[in-house]
Image (cartoon, rainbow, N blue to C red; front, side, top):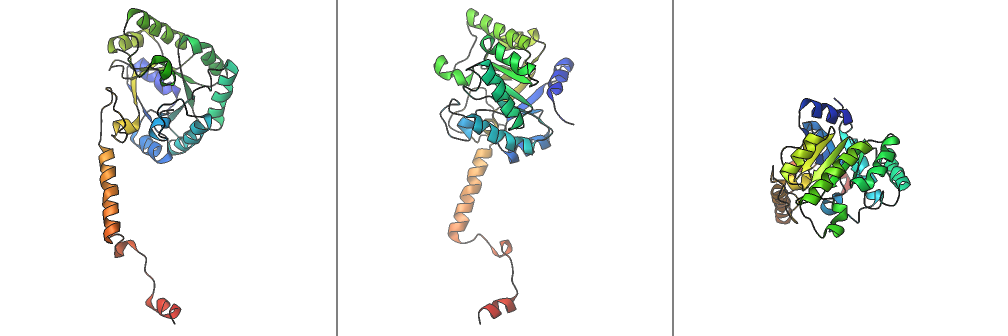
Length: 276
């Protein structure tokens, strides 16, 4: 069955959890669809895990479109949400709508995601009015990491907690169908989830949100530059990959791979003819 924004709405209404993972390529997206993930986020986290950037600020529209197209080809029946990169919507409402449209038309996304609360509510409203579903993102917003002074939990004091609730209500009012809550205290995330009628997706926000999202390279132990507190390794794929690569290197250098069964045969008479 095709997953859409209604999958999120129905799950919230029925008290069912929704699942979201990041993916950036065809093969990974295909596997995720085969096992039934509800949504794939083509996150600007690709800057860190795929392109080796220190942060997400350097990611471009062309990067997002390129990877989103690949993901959608691998997961045609999954709700694919594509991040709007830094400065693709902060400059003006007009730029936000145009760039969201590009992610839909060129990237083949089913929805877009952008960071911010009250400040970007007018952009969210304009994009939604243009017929494009929007997932909001509040709390720790990685594109603003320079303003935050690092990766820190958000909403811990009274003023910050009130601001986060205000942001959540603002993006809901603007028309977002879901909101990611990143690095938010668990009790605050629970309060926001109960207050909203749209879906909340947690990442470092406890277990009382309507769903969860993780970077797939984190949860499979493929990305080792750092490990956030909220990440659980569901499989140690990184070590298995290194083991497989090392095995390949050892066998090639030893001359044991490829073996005879990995090659193709030719008739002896053909070889005799060409050697005359």
